[in-house]
Structures are given as C-alpha cells and as structure tokens.
Image 1 (spheres, one colour):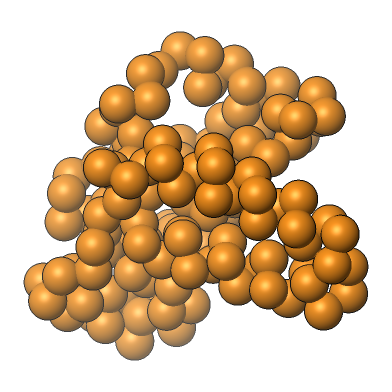
Image 2 (spheres, rainbow, N blue to C red):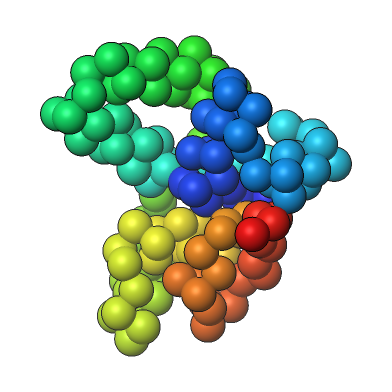
Length: 139
C-alpha cells in the first residue's frame, strides 16, 4: 500500500490538460487506486491551496474546487487516513528533532504508523523518518 503525498494529488490535476509528469503517469498506471491512500492533511493542504488561489483567480479556483470535490474526495472517501492520537504523538517526535514541517510530520507519521510507502516528489522533506519513499517524478 502507498500513501500519496499532496504533491502527487496536485499532479493529478494535470491529467486534464495532458501535462502530468510522465513518471507519475507511468507509476499510477502500474497500481490500483485501491492500493493508495491519502492523509486527511492532504485534503486540508489542497483545500487551503484552492482558497488561496481564489484570492488571486476566482475562475481557476472554481475549476480546482470542482475537480477536488468531484474527482479526489469521492475517490479517496474510503482511503483518507485520519490523525489518531498515536499518529499525532509520532508526528511530534518527527517534528521536533528534525524541525520538519508539521504537516509533513503528520504525513510521515501516518505512513509510518500504517506501514505504507510514501509517494512524493519531496524526498528530502522525509529523509530520516524511517519510512520507505518513492519518487515517481521524471525531472
């Protein structure tokens, strides 16, 4: 099983215009959607991004919001992992010694707790977390 980082979910939006990274597209073609999960933190990060986009470009934000509500939330309804007490404590342990971004710490702790491989472009953000990391991006 795989935990998809926020940047992977964001990359999915590029399917609409055919600009998705070739490596991500190839990796996604090799797995089943049922083999993937996201953190509730990813939902928050995407929604935050849409709200910030609305301050600058309401039309683009509306398109992003429609995609998010129709394509992402329904697909991951059953595979969105919550922040439990155990995950929150693990995240704190990752956040303090490494000065890791707290959202990244929650995502890393979620992957660690559930023994999932984390799929992300931001490999350096998750080094020394004790989790397996996959970077499908072709740069």
